[in-house]
Length: 367
Ligand SMILES: NC(=O)C1=CN([C@@H]2O[C@H](COP(=O)(O)OP(=O)(O)OC[C@H]3O[C@@H](n4cnc5c(N)ncnc54)[C@H](OP(=O)(O)O)[C@@H]3O)[C@@H](O)[C@H]2O)C=CC1
Ligand SMILES: O=C1OC[C@@H](O)[C@H](O)[C@H]1O
Picture 1 (cartoon, rainbow, N blue to C red):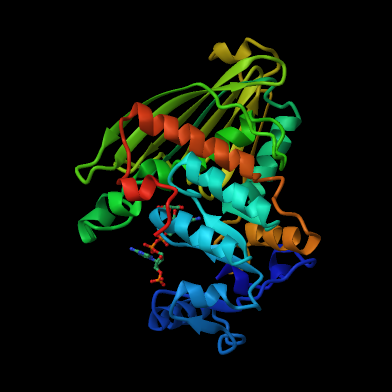
Picture 2 (cartoon, protein in one colour; picture 1 turned 60 degrees about the horizontal axis):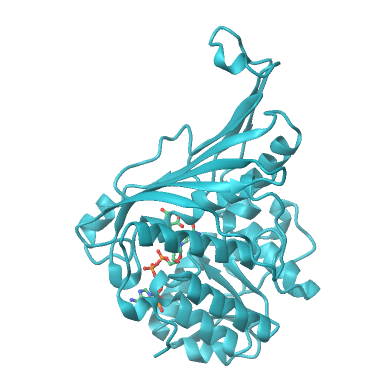
């Protein structure tokens, strides 16, 4: 839907998007998808020109397609992205990029060897809230960052009741809280604590992780709590905690807490599209511990949830378009090495939780 909204509604004029074709497992569902999206956008133009394919292979063979967006269940990302890159297409692939770090590394290597654009679709990195968060941090309002708690818990119970085979809880479709929801608190932690975000072939060091996991009756992870050590440029270790669960709901008032020496920042729910963030600053270090001393400054920034009717994916799409236009193969803001690091951390969390997916999902082999 976001691709159908005029970019000028978000003050963007340097790029535009066109849905050239939709690939589906059946032509009928491709048609239904197009109908529903055009209908939701309330747009009439362009629909008839969209080519409908009843297989992904036909889409990959279409010479008019510059970039493929992969929005299949996690279990299929590796094979789908491998096929798209092998066919010479630029790729934006939904989170989690794949099931494990070995698959991520294989796809990254493939994209680089073919000189193609490749990115994990982490839309939060491009939303206005993320830029505002960085601005507040850089302004020094909360002083030196000393700890970050990031969370996304969404109760999948009602979904599971309706469909016990739903991808969110189904091990065969690589369900579970960590792969589905975990990328959000992870990228929030990484945004604050990794420092520089830059595309580079130099891998990032894998941090120490200590985690705990519970499981659903369907055999995927129900909840994960992980403490992660982030080494800072000045040599300090700062702890980030990642909490994600599908058996409860994050409080609406707060999904992240960023604690500094002079204050803190609260980021409101939902972690995938925060509605607001608030910072509080005290005059002196140590004042925070005294409940009688009030902050000298605080400010709340509200974010329009759906400007121009978009869901919030448009900003990442704009970045993809700019990268392709400018010949960049990665986005500095969501570089592949950060995606690889996320998958390495998630592998470690799953190892500590004694949780693996069926072997056919963890393999590098393609059917
Ligand atoms: N950024 C965000 O806010 C969101 C991201 N996501 C991500 O998007 C991806 C898809 O999630 P979601 O849309 O909920 O998934 P769905 O279960 O709705 O599947 C999406 C599409 O994948 C294809 N598909 C479904 N099941 C299978 C299967 N068993 N085998 C092969 N293909 C299948 C179907 O397309 P067809 O039949 O047309 O081929 C289907 O329409 C995930 O990676 C998820 O994490 C999801 C929700 C929000
Ligand atoms: O990406 C997502 O964001 C919203 C969640 O509710 C959903 O499960 C997930 O896929």
